[in-house]
Length: 228
Image (tube, rainbow, N blue to C red):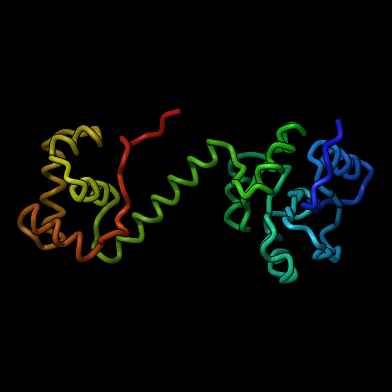
């Protein structure tokens, strides 16, 4: 059943062909959005849409070409939502996300019904990515945060985790349980931490954390490892 037409629009960036036109017609019919097909070198109209989604075919605009293509977008389209489809696998998705400001990723094998649901979510201001991809991004972000502290204080990722828990008020036993190590291992890490930051006890360490890391210290709120 055809949905009521919405003022929001979807521009599909792909090769002009009967197949791409059928894809556009399907999206239009099942989402109610205005859907148009453009090639990579087309001049995209700014339009009068309240919201706009640029849906990029990764077979038409390669991942390597995405940054240059995005830089050449007219200012009127700079705030449009970007998503890519025909993504091959997880590594391809991560590469795409590192090259362009994408808020949605659709894998090649995903059904048209799933793409329609994702298009609705994206135009509602949500992210559309698989749970596994989101988990990888979160872990990458945390690792990047931890690595950012190294030049300042010389602490390892594990030591950053321990002082995060120390800041949260955890005892040695609680830290050991949270990180699945022995209390002896925690004590050894604390000894190395105290030596590196030139303090002699937990109170001095907490003062150092507050003065040098403060609110930018990543929070450790779950045991290591992800659960479904």
